[in-house]
Image 1 (tube, rainbow over the protein chains, first blue to last red):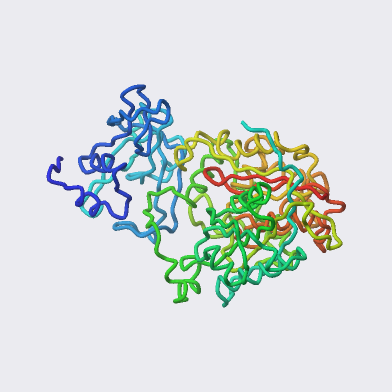
Image 2 (cartoon, chains in turn cyan, brown; image 1 turned 180 degrees about the vertical axis):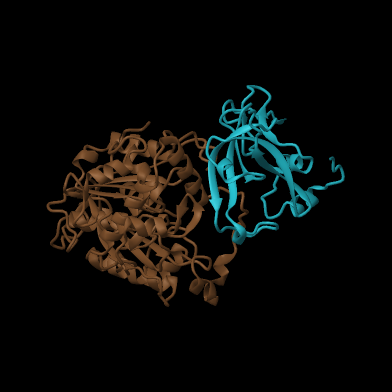
Length: 151
Length: 389
């Protein structure tokens, strides 16, 4: 799904209250296209999050992005019994799961996002998960769902 | 790593003042601040004309140093700063300013106000409404407080332990607070109470989190040679540091074995002539219980994941609290969990009170050395060693 007509102002407005600025615009443009991008150094190959304008390893400013495949492992896991308001989030119907996931193809690079389609026993550190997307305010947001376990 | 420490034992915490803490104050943040400040300046044996440095951390609801200087009528200030919150950034600024000659006597004043989202009464107070505007969080944000729940999950999973260690930290602080007249909450707490408390960000609940309060702490920092003799032992800064690991974004920090507490402890140890086994007073930050577990383990008191076993081994059942080696209290004042959420200034104050021998009812006998570790895992880890001169 491509949204070529999305202006910078649209991007900022539609992803509010997230902080969309010069450094992070490319990250959120990826979201709009259901593409999870991480920063990549074209000189030394280092990858990292969150988006920043310099490679912390070699100080190159020649940074672009690579798209992660999205399989990973739950590194940190919290169940929010209360928290910030957001459309579609109702803490009274049960705790809202938020995980920090470390990507299998980029060890050490992690994204914090919600978990969907999970049974309670899936909401644990170490669970294998895969990238998926959901919409909030009409805009795609990344999420993770438990990876099907081969039986 | 710099192991230089030219200010060792040169700088005194010459005065302290505190309003005490409550969840029901109806005076302004500025009034709390000036009350603590006047007490600290008088405690040091100084007057307004002597104070030429003013440091006030940028706490929500706080005031600029200029406002405090004007309110107190300080005639001539040559150093002022507004460091980010958490105690040691401001203490370090004042200590460095005095040591460098930027000023001779620095007032460091810490204001604490319950914020509109901390409690219903605070939310209903129209005079606090302006404090509500800040960065708006989303559920998926790990920044700031949620990070400790997230890393607590990692702690429990990686070490295969239950929440007992966190719970014993909470019980210890409550039992200690009962001996501190400044404390906001002193009702006894059991481990059952801890487990029964409402979950907030699972795996952490209400009693894993510090207690929002109104109040203020203040300190006066001078050179040891300049501090007036007011007939009590002087307390001097032995070493002080902050520490920052990289990356320090809450979800990118390397691991439980490598975060900012490790940087602080490596550095502080290298700058200090004594360490944990020779510390008479130990104050460890407890904004969240998991932070205290981190300090206990990273100081080497317990192996990774071993906080619960360590606390049980040193638990004094009759007093429902820990006395390490039968003697050393952890946060004798009750910490941020029970005295009140002072972002560590309470920990520094308590260390000074203990080293002076003025901690009635909770005094560690013949306390000569103190180790204070404040802040968490990411971008506010800090350490301080103090000596009775």
